[in-house]
Every structure is written in C-alpha cells, then in structure tokens.
Image 1 (cartoon, rainbow, N blue to C red):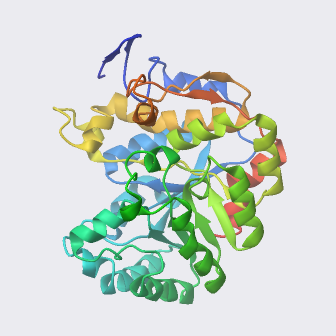
Image 2: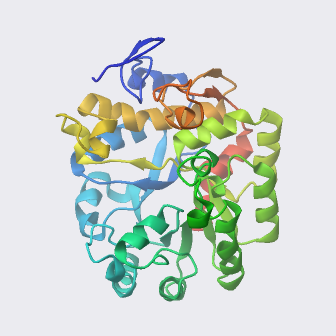
Image 3: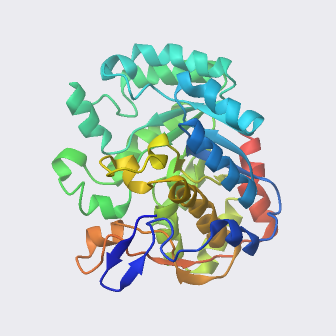
Length: 361
C-alpha cells in the first residue's frame, strides 16, 4: 500500500488514512433497513468489478447502476449478473468527439435501451466547456444544445429517465472556474436545466445532490418548482464534506421533506489501472496501486456514506479530500474534513436507499 507523509504524520493511502480493515469495519453497521441500490457509478474492468462486488456484499449494496461503455456491458454483466443496471452514455473514448456526442449517441441510446438501460445520462459539468473547445465546438456539451435535445427526444421516446450533471463544487468555482468569462457563475449552469425540466416531463435525476450540497435552501427551491426533479447523493468526498457542515436537524428536515426524491449513489469509479501498481503515471493509477488499495478505494465510499447517513458519529473522514487544499493553502492535499453523521430515520432511509429509485428505474 502506498504511504503519504504529511506534517502531522504518516498514513496508508488516500482512501484509508487510518489503515483500517474495511472488511472488519463493515460489521460496525447493522443490516440496512432495505437492500441498498446505488444509482450512480462508473464500472470498468472485470478485476476491479470483482473487488467492487465484494465491497457491495459487505456494505449491503444489492444493486448498482453504472455508466459502463456499451462495448463492455457483457464483461461487467458476467461479474455482477442481475445486480447491475446500465445507464446510457456517449462513447467518451471516441476521438471524434463531435460525432460521439452527436449523431452516434442516438444509436447508442437505442442499443443501451435494448440492454435494459432505463436512464440516459447528460453530462454538462462546467469543465465540459473545455472539452468542447478542444473538440471544436464550445457548446458540444451544453445541456440545451440542439444535438443534445435530439438525444433527449430519442431517450424520452424510449421511455427513459434522464440523469444530468450540471454543476461542480463551490471550491472549484473559487479556483478552477474562477474565469467567469469562460465558465460563468454556478447558478448560470442551472438556467438551461430549469427550462428542460419543464420541456421534458420525464423523471430527471440531477447528480451530486443536484450539484449544490452546499446550499440546501437552493435545492428546496428547485425541488419545489419542478415536480419531476430528483437528486442523487453521489460523489462521496464532496457529499461528506458539505453535508457534514450542515446541522443534523437541517439535513434530516430536508431529507424528510423530499423523501422519495433523493436517491442514494456513490459515484464509485472502478478501473483495471487501480490494480496495476507501477509508477502511478495516470490519474486513475494514482488513486490505488494494487488489489488491497483498490478494494479500500471502493469500500471506503460505502463506509463513509453509510456513516454519514445512518450514524451520529463525529470524526475525521478516512478519505483524503484535496478540495480542502484548493481553497486553503494551509491544508495538505491528503487532509480530510469532519464526517458528521446525520442519523436519518428508518422510513427516510428506506426510500433513500431503495424506494425512490424503484419508482424511476
């Protein structure tokens, strides 16, 4: 396992700062009130998927929805069987980005639907502006671009729900997206979403607590204005950091009010590079270097999320969060925020963990 040294000491890896055994730690939790469905993940690689399956078994995850490449569905299904469902996505590996996110996506949506996918993903993160400029069209991933509306028409016609990513953390808008002439403000990214929510009356799932776990009041307003809007609570580091900052009573009131419209998710990304070790030259390989640290990467997300939602523990997160250092030069990239558990009620958990997603997909 890789070792990081900081001013305050030494710990094992960024997903296991205290060197715990996540297999043993799983026993810290009772059986969840219902088998959990993870509505947001990215599963790639059969070896990595096998480790994820073990983490799912330990932490009560019954089913998982994944943004897996269409071509890889058979191999991932061979590992996870009926426990995996697939979300329609463009081919981000295609060097012809204009075609991949335009005309070619229409046929892939149909192919995903034939594979049982009931959700179609529309990624419109602010950094998508850079992606589009590199491809020759700054509006390539704009949520309301004409070619994306055609994809929405196709998916809606096939009876699919929509998933969207429309905003990133406040920490990123303070740093990575500081150029407002290029990226606009965070609220600017919600304007096309609101128009499309009214135009396409299908169920929408907006990822990562709607992109605004920092502002539950804003999410209240959005959910009240748009009855077809749902949000998933994926992106573990982001969710742990920001939900922990809210008072437990505020979080419980929010989750109670919107029971049935908030879905559990992790945003776990599995990849064979996590198992390969070596010199960590890629972003993926830097997250884990062998089977042990890869398992920690996946299991830590479920440990942290269940601790956040089910317990009243107050402790430092076991997962490094580089966003802290982005906005505070005194912090180290392997520091972590407080994890402040919110102990949701059983009935809220039942809907959050399972009931809400079964109404959609």
